[in-house]
Length: 179
Image (cartoon, rainbow, N blue to C red; front, top):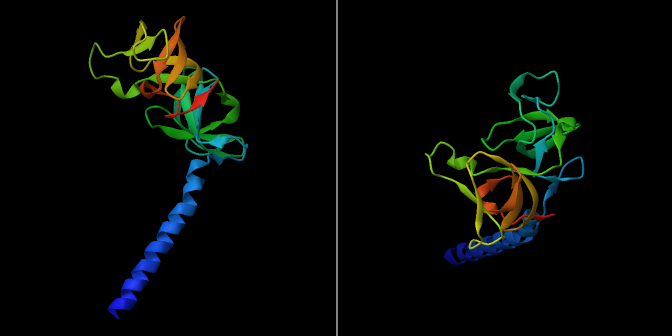
């Protein structure tokens, strides 16, 4: 009986390891929404006034209203012409796709807001930690992102153009590269 249980445990362990091996490639692939675009993905708000609804229709209540264009949001789901989004604070809800833009923006270190004076995100002349600092950006400031190389993002804030470490913004995934 002990030998049988030992063999059974071995077979179960082998089956689990094969199942995990087969499932690994699926995690590497991005899911696609009904639009054919990857999910999740970052976009920004197109309009100065955007209603965040509790469901995917104008029949649902407005839970929140954004009053600034260019705020970065993450699309996590799609339903018809509605997109479920999440902002840098974790607030979630539904907006009509017409109110979203493919323009990439990011928030500088939103997790550091309110942690005291003297906390900044450095914008550098070159995409390297030793590059000259050309601006110091307060946490929570929205920047326009032109490209990311997986470690650094070229960004613009109030007319200043430079590079910000990808780990210091919310609006680009770790390791994500795009132009």
